[in-house]
Structure formats: C-alpha cells, structure tokens
Length: 438
Image (cartoon, rainbow, N blue to C red):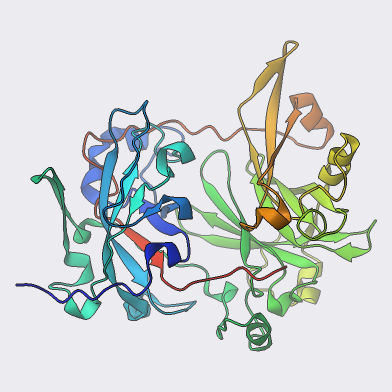
C-alpha cells in the first residue's frame, strides 16, 4: 500500500537551521553499554535528556553526496525519524505536543566514529552535509501506526543491516513553564507588549553550563524576566537542574555595574566548579555595531549558599537574594591593550570555554577561549573569532577561584552497532526564524 507523502513545502536549507536530538535515548543501545554507564564521573545512566545539535551546515538534501574525510575509514549511520514542528508555540504540555507537529521525515545522522560519547567533538558530529533529510514529510494522520510505534530500517547497498522502532525511545523533556510566555508573535514589539511574565523576546536562556562533576546543569537568562523588570532590569535568573533527580532551583544574579552605573545583559555562563561560575556581561558596542566596544567582561559569581528564588517574583523580591559578580577579566581592555582597536572588538562576544592545559616554563596553564557571534553577516560583524587566554592555578586563586576543575569527561564506549541514536527523535523547526537585532 502506498501512503500519500506530500512534498515538503520548505526545503531543508529553509529550516530554522538547527536539528535537535537526544542522545542515550535508545533503550537497546543504552543497555548495550552495560557497566560502562556506571563508571565515573556519572556512575549511573542519565536521568535527564542528553541533548545535542546538528547545525545548519550539516543539513543535506536527498541524494546529495556526503564527503567522507580522507582519514576516516567509515561513517556511523544514525537513522531516525524527525518530528517537524509546524506551529510556533511555547509551554506546551506533553499531552498537547503532537498537535504542534506537522509530520515526520527520515533523518540520517552521520557521525565520524568516536569514543567520547557524552561530549562528542564538533568534528565528529557536525561535518558538512552530515545530516541528510528526507525531502518529504508524512503527516501524522497518514501514519500507519502511532508516532511512538514506527519502524526505522537501514539498508546499505540494498541489504538490510539494522532495524529499530521509535517505541524504544526512553524519554521526552520539558522546560520550566514560568520561564516561557503565553502570547507569541513574529513582531518583537507586539510580543513584548502582549506578555507580562516570562522571558523577554530574543533574550531567553542564553547561557548553559554543566558543572565539571557532570551532576548539575545551569541555564542563564540573558535578561531579567518580564515580571522581574524585563530588558534593562537588574536581576537575571540562573536556573539550576539536578541531572539525576530533575529537581530545579533558581538563583538571582545582579547584573548592575557600579562603575558604569548601568545594567547589562549576560551572554554566557561557564562553570569553574560546583558553585563558582564565570558570567559574560557585555554591551552591544563594537564590530558589527559600527561603534567602539566598552563593556565586555567576565565576572566571577559564587552561588554557594545562595537563596532559591523560584517562588519569588519581581525585582524588589529578588534584590535581597541576588548574588553580585566580581571582575575576573576585562576582555575589551585586554584586547585593546594588545593593539586591537576598540572598534574591531566584536560587539557580540558570546561564547566562553576552557580548552586543553598547556605547559610553559614548567608551569601548567589553563586555556580559556572567548568567541564571538557574527550572526552570519561577516560583511558587517567580521569573521567568527577566538581569543585565547591562559591562567595558572595561582592566577585563578588570586581572582577568588576556590577550586578549578576542567571539564574532562571520561569516554564511554559506544556499542558495536550502526548507531546509538537509532530510534531517537530529532526535532526539526520548520518555522523560518530570524534573529532580531539587539
């Protein structure tokens, strides 16, 4: 029997640009890991979703050739069904979720074989063209079975090499409801005017960090929630999620800089240990804005003993519980001191990560990478750039860091099957989105 399969109205390159997937979400493959998932640092299977993305550069059309790197003998095939989101929505209950799905299509997640499972490198998972998408979407109403009872089969040169089912998936996930908004609009001003609570338009959870011990996930709102003062307000929320239990707490961060007498939005959160974090505060000035950069700072904040503000609302309520940061690194000043013009400092420095340690003169240094977002407009904002700093343990201690643990996660071997994410569900945003200027 041939089922109707209408043409997909939007070609893959017109999708929102990112495919979201969930690792360790295929029960048989997870079971095949055996005792490996009980080894440090996690010592147990995941209790919460392990998410990953396939960026825009990975999307490929049906029949498009996929380049295999010369040094790689073969690619892993990750066949799965993608859910195409057909309606703009937020705060959707699990019961109503499928009402927002336009249909399903085949997705082939190709990866370079690798050992690092919890944090696979970009060079393994995000090669150009490594996410071929089916060219047509099958509506849910035309499916021969429920979406959680569909079969996925992999053929190589006409021979069946693997079969799976979406019924073997392990989990779904949700975000805290109160962070979202009720009235969505493609027009920023209309959306802002229509919501008295929740995240501010285009200023949602900008920073994500996981503690070096792998136990706790943190999300950082770029600006205060609407009920807490909104854009230009003083107290951003840092959301803490216990990965094992799913328990959630919230803390308030004071983004006011006294020497500037001004509040600033925050673009990144980086964990140093289980209670200290680096926060990237910045203005919108510099390369890409046609002006001179002034405020680009990493600030150290300590959440040890901080008050849970989950039940609080409003700036006045948060004021007494908010934690302030201390200056860790003045990025703008350091770059200009090395000869970079203030107009050449990227306006949107938004990424921070520690890299591999280096040894110089017998001293071990930790490398810190700072990166910008050029919004895919290099003619205006320049190229994507990485600025690398180094710090010794003594340097960190002098800045108030009580303990530093780099995020080195022990490798968990993958089973000898075609792909561990078979049967997992990738989420494809079919609504074209554009980033509004900040």
